[in-house]
Length: 163
Image (tube, rainbow, N blue to C red):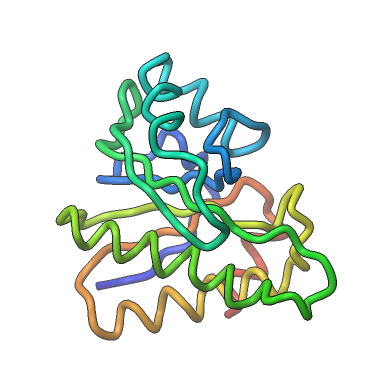
C-alpha cells in the first residue's frame, strides 16, 4: 500500500501495531521503548517480554499492546553501531524486515515504526533513515500494508521525507 512519514508520537498512533525499538532482553528502557512501556500501563507487558526474551539483534517478537491505542507491539532489536563494518546494516535491515514479516503473519494492515537504532544505539542518522525507507519500500513492492515511520524530531522528519 504505502509508506508514510509522520511527525507524531508513535505511542498514541491508531494503527494495528507499533514497533518498539527494543533491547535484547526486551526490558523497559529509555526513549521510544520507555514511552511504550509507560503508555501500555501494564505489568503483563513486562511479564510477556520476560517470557519472550532475550532475542538476537535483528529479530522481532510480538505482544499485546494492552492499554495503547494499537492492538499489538512488535519488539525489534536493532544493532548498536560500532564501526559500520560489523554487520550493522544487515542487522538493521533485518529488524525492519522481521517486524514486517511478523506483522504479515498476524494479518496486521497498518504498522508504525520509530527510526530503529538511530538514538542511543548511535547509528548514523542519514544512513539509518535510508535503510529504513529502502527496506520498507522493498517490502511494500510485494505486500499490501500501510506503513508509517513516526518521528518527533523535525530534522529527522525532513531527512526521511526527502528520500
